[in-house]
Image (cartoon, rainbow, N blue to C red):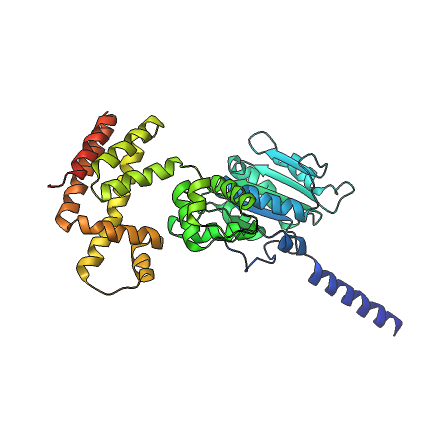
Length: 363
């Protein structure tokens, strides 16, 4: 009987251990936070032994790393339990050896492997053996800017780690995303104020965050208005690009040429300006089609059909009044010709002639 009880006790203990031990690739995922907003609280509940971060948005990568650091009890970049490796300079064996050692007087150890995309297939095979049985006291983070999801190592890493994709929000999602960022910082922004901020700053997430912190310092208990944003937030290149496309949309030649000259003085390449002008005409073409169809659509339905933020869709619908279908087709032909000229060695004059042509009252 005693042997039976001891055996059952061991079995119960082993079962509890299996249930309590974290398993690779089976960690709790955050469901209540939008993409790009890591929750340190969720990490603290169940820090993963292996994390795979990929994406080109450095602002989101940095936020994710700060969240992981908090979960691992890392208080500074000089913490002895925090190590950063460059995959192009370190051998996997050295990283794995460090990952297997216990943390020094801390709750957890954090190893960050940057440029992990430079590892070869055989080097990833070396890591695979560790990934299958990671040290639960260590959080090993792989960071890859661009990843080919067809590769074997990606599939293996995705299976044996917690995957985080740091993908920036689409332009149509930026105002809502900005409102959530502001709320996280303790600042309430209504949709109009968030739209105004995005219009002035553009899609630079790091710059957006800095401006939000600046607005928070100014606001105090005051509810911010569009006028506050216009007064406190300086114009960026993105603002001037919007000024250019808006002026072309209403055929304001003076305004368009002024914005164009400012952008060229700022060093914006003509090919990028051509791309932004073409992008606006694609929106105008969609707006024109919606108008020609004559259906009664809500602002939300129009924005959804155009694949743009509501304020962008509304502006395009207003501008489409100035652009019958045949004139939009002529504009696309002019854009194509300008593209060919730029690729053949043309310079700023190509874009200047294009803007003059597009703003002509009679075409």
